[in-house]
Amino acid sequence: MIYLLLSIVASSWIFITFKLFAKYNVDTLQAIIFNYIVACTSGLVAYTEALEINRIPSFSWFYGTIMLGFIFILVFNFMAITTQKNGLSVAAVASKMSVAIPVVFGIIVYNESTGTLRIVGIIIALIAVYMTSMKNVGGVSIKKENLIYPLLVFIGGGVIDTTLKFMETNYVAKMDIPIFSATIFGFAAILGILILVWKGIRGTLRITAKNIIAGICLGVPNYFSIYFLIQALRYENMDSSTIFIINNVAILLVSTFAGILLFKEKLIFKNWIGIILAIISILLVTFSI
Image (cartoon, rainbow, N blue to C red; front, side, top):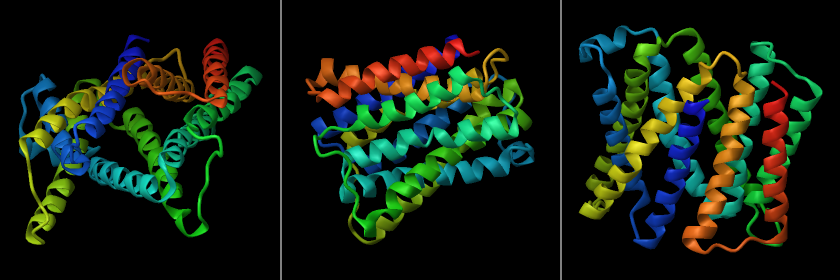
């Protein structure tokens, strides 16, 4: 259970860091790319076994990390496009709602329990995510021609969590979690560096110390958010669907309260209803174990 709590803390810290990016005019793309480099380095440092880089391709999980690394940075870019074209609320809902994919996967593939409390808790959690993420009275507004972007965020986020669970269950040894996580971030970093090179060739790249520092501040908690989530998924007394619901909804709660306390964000009535429903959903899912 401690790993789940630590994953929630690390993921919530990512939210706080992103909020600071806007305050200090950080180039988000550059910071994200440097973040992946730092996250990869963190995993390499945390790996306690003798490290031989040339052996990494021989691990059974290697090709899965290539896919995950590319999806990581692609989903980030889709989130940025969604925010620009449809608004932050739409991006937040699409990202958080993606928890439904690994939950359904766990129930179907791993025959995880589907008691009444669990089902009700999951439904309430999804409603809570929607209501807490809404920051305007009008709700979500999506133009038909831009529907593809939040859909890709939804699918991409769900694929990441589902693949992490699948690989953790079938391929990743406990001692290999740091190097497994590092390799994912490493491939995300490679794709990011290629993007920077392309921007440099086009003459639109301007790297600053501020963006590098921002990437460092983001990279360490980003690595541990994945590391602790994978460790939490190994907890035998709790199904992965329960882990994902509690993790996702708790991050939303902590991030929301951090926004109120640290950034003086204002919540509308439906946000408070969403917070209450989120707490109820965590209790229902937890007590359904």
